[in-house]
Image 1 (cartoon, rainbow, N blue to C red):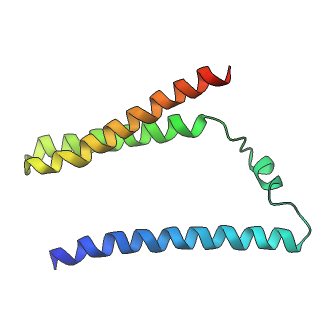
Image 2 (cartoon, one colour; image 1 turned 180 degrees about the horizontal axis):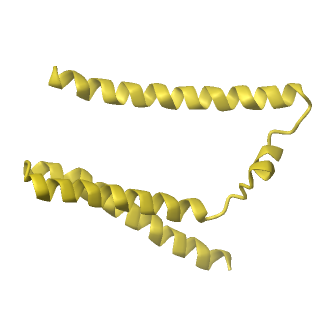
Length: 107
């Protein structure tokens, strides 16, 4: 039964991604049918393609990395379980660095 969870997690993730893409497509098609431009939706939501998502995503990933590492240190599980913690930690650090690099290149 424990092996089945490793198969279900990616399948559920892929299905959620497909549902999100389908929902966004339906939303754009409904806007086109009503004579609206789907690009106007970005202006309505306040999305300007800025760099704010980099720092938010980076902080979330750093938090997840620290949580994985802290759980690993406290419970002292197997060593290979350090990998997810360091993966999320360094991905978050990379996004935060990207935030500062994008900020300097746009100024």
